[in-house]
Amino acid sequence: MWSIPCRPYYPIFATPDFEAAVVGTFNQGEDADTTRALADMLAGALCGAQALPRRWLGRLERSARMAITEQTSALLALRVVGLVA
Image 1 (spheres, rainbow, N blue to C red):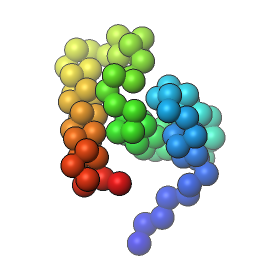
Image 2 (spheres, helix red, strand yellow):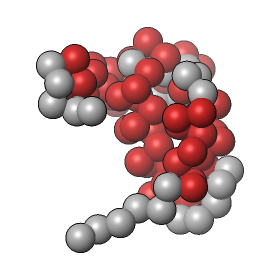
Image 3 (cartoon, rainbow, N blue to C red):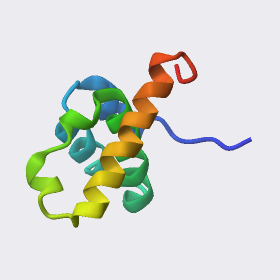
Image 4 (cartoon, helix red, strand yellow):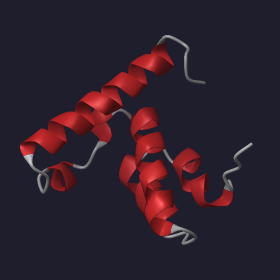
């Protein structure tokens, strides 16, 4: 069974703010690139696509922005129907 240390992900659950959660998780160190990728996904699912910082999205290609928004919305939909706790 896989195990993920919880300490680096604490900021995600300690704040409802997407940017603060992601930056706080990244600043915890550990395996920063993997931790950040997981933090982005979890915070996006918890906060919703509308919480993504516009200045971050503005630096991405349009196709990447659309994919992120669609994936985040799909994760939120799973949460709404009860498939994700």
